[in-house]
Image (cartoon, rainbow, N blue to C red):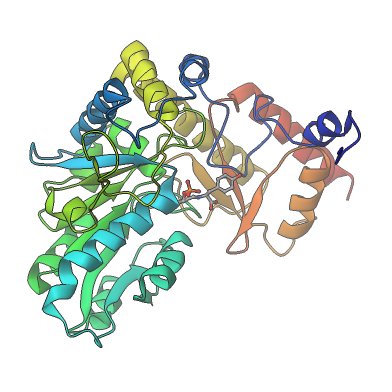
Length: 385
Ligand code: 0PR
């Protein structure tokens, strides 16, 4: 039986946009580094779900956890897992915190998580799946959690606070040191969603001093850090780091029918090791300095775009600290944000609209020369009005 005309598959795939041109500015994923793609393709059948068959790949996962952990001062007692992405990592993190903490509560107590309004939708999914109440706290004009309101939102049923390092909207980072103090005062956990920012902030100058994205903050139970975003490996690749083994143990299942009776603390059973291997081979090749170079060039290009947009009369409400930028059009501007967004898409440039701003995510294929092309197009669009 044939479900499609023979050439339909090619036709359908030809409809997709591609990252390599550097015109996709709406995505946190991008074209993977060539070295990572090569390693990925060579290892597509590796399964982290069966460590007795793939004991070498299991070792690679441990090494990747150590590398990622090193960026955030993960203690030697720390551990982690490589997952499908930030959503799975965030859901898994809350699953572990819920199971670890729920013993102290009656079954009927609705357990609560306090989070900034800026959190990714994966926390709404996690709360729904895990039967948790997600209490969202308003954010400040700088797009960070409002600390006073966060404190007010805490109840006797609160089990954790979420901090975001690199918000989906504008790449901002919550005041982690203050959130840590709040958590220590009330004796509950903190989870940091650094799905995007986790492989950005550690490579910026003075990052540790400014942001303290680190397990040195004693309330931090876990950190999400994706390798398929700023890690430049093919999808799917997410990472979750845990301060110690008590968290994965709280969600641990033994597989008695597999050789070696492996224990799993992950949602999925079969788990591709390809992106994990791709990350290690890329890291072995380019290392900390290589990542630093990529990150700093993305951030430099973002600041260049911000400055040029401002020159053209657009408003940048939040000074970008990483490679995500939001821009507004003032009332008198010839094009409003939805119109600009639409016209750019028609010309093959994808952006998104967040909080009334045109949002640009500047990934490695979008070089400065590409941004100059975009600015030229913008000038033409303005002239045409
Ligand atoms: N945490 C943060 C801070 C995120 O920004 C995202 C994804 C996640 C968690 C979830 O990660 P996964 O998508 O890996 O599960 N943020 C992007 C977003 O929702 C994901 C994305 C990527 C969307 C590429 C579109 C796209 O083309 O905007």
